[in-house]
Picture 1 (cartoon, rainbow, N blue to C red):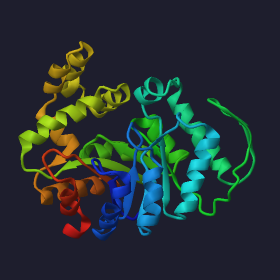
Picture 2 (picture 1 turned 30 degrees about the vertical axis):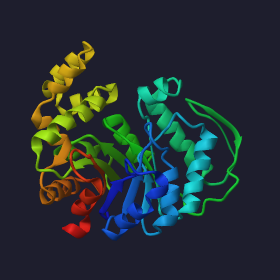
Picture 3 (picture 1 turned 120 degrees about the vertical axis):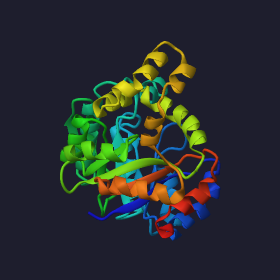
Picture 4 (picture 1 turned 180 degrees about the vertical axis):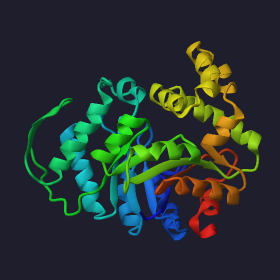
Length: 319
């Protein structure tokens, strides 16, 4: 399968309306993809809609859209609209998100996450054909929905996945998996569950800085924010990091955020955040691909580095 170097969008600290030249430079630097997210900043679709006209060569992907926060019909309309705006260049990534985003922020019960993702994928497969959908799914029902616009090129559907159950769903019902917060070596444990011939998109956190102490200190806060979320804790227990992270989890549960952050070992930061000289970062990103990732979505962590220059230093054209 073709290897595709991509980046995470939109870019922090720059208004969306002012990002056109950033997107254009991304394409000029040799990146092939841009991948958005949806977790309290922009929604996942608007940056890609802008990119569809700004950069007609880039593939556009969501990584990811929560399966809960849009109703089935609205989700189908969003996916169809992007597919029409960028025919053949859009990939739709969907996932459970987290109880924080779904339940705490949107007052939607975070029930049956596996079933919700599975049901939404199956509904979208039906709806994007243009046929009328009337179906009782396990987690929702649809009665008489039909898309009002024809989707000429149905986009691939990728599934955000961490552990075996969802990884297998990504391979059976989806066209591949979206993974993040893992090391290059962890990829070898994850990919076989998805199956052969499937796309594997990895969001990789990168900071091309030679100030290892600064990156580790800042990186601990980012890691603590994610790895204390139950689904990510379970993921890293499955990957075998339980002993390394046990002290962090205990301190977090006790309400001591400072101690929890301090308890994250350097080796965990070094595993999960690619940092060092730019050339070494490029080599480490390549290891992800060597181990089974087909598409990267680099997310530059601005720990004392200029994000735009970092994109240049990490670009395929810099190799």
